[in-house]
Length: 229
Image (cartoon, rainbow, N blue to C red; front, top):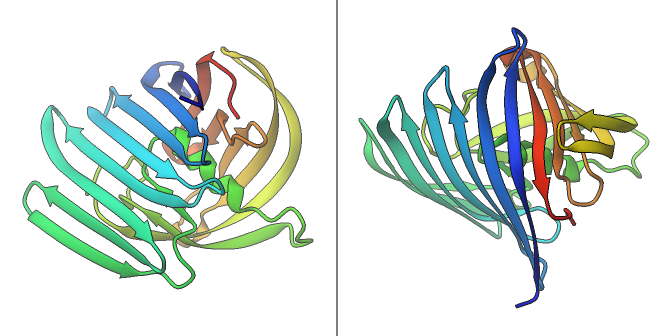
């Protein structure tokens, strides 16, 4: 089979120095261009365990996703999301709500999807238009599985409206090594949140580092096996 894969681990480090959690991931890029990200996320302090499979097209637009959420050892909910044309659909089962079916009209189609592994936050950066002279660009049609910063609710369809800024090219050293990155800033004023800074590998949008003051946490690439493409 002709495909390319890489895998690794991301560590969640609180400002007080403790490890809040970690995320194991594998990404596979198929011959026809589809990219499948698989992630297992553990958050020790809030006792969240999340399993995610997220498929994107070659331009990082969402195709489908499956999410299973466990909080404090109990199943909170599971959902399957699909994105086709100008519609997004979700079939979910959640504790307290039972079975929920959603269909959301998305003019122009979903541009990106926040499934809540921090690995996947970085895929939003593909929406930044470097040919546009506007430095801070509003980004629409980003859907998500939870409106909470830690993704602890749902999973079900929601929508974000953010602005994105390109800060520049930077060399960043993390436990996995030193990488040439593009540095972006997500402006989250609509939610009263501080900006989120991300450093990604060009092309693959592989996470190298994220810093977010809201959770007082820095997320770093701790291990990497294979070459992101």
